Length: 88
Image (cartoon, rainbow, N blue to C red; front, side, top):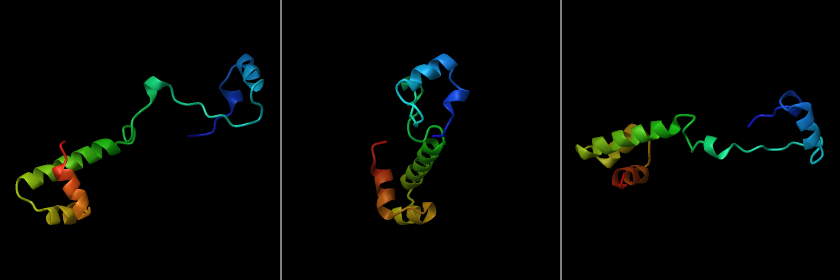
């Protein structure tokens, strides 16, 4: 979230109307419902983790052990178990 000066984005009439309710304070304007992105969508983290987890499941299915996957992907034994035994 970044700070933007209202004077630089709102028309004068609208700014005067807003100032009737709040003057000289910071106001958070939430993202419109249709524009809100889910976790990891804008940064690519979600795709990266989905790809990584798919790779872990694939290697596990051909016989790579949980300990080997833990060392390869730098994850705990329990984290690997959650990934390979999930219903995804």
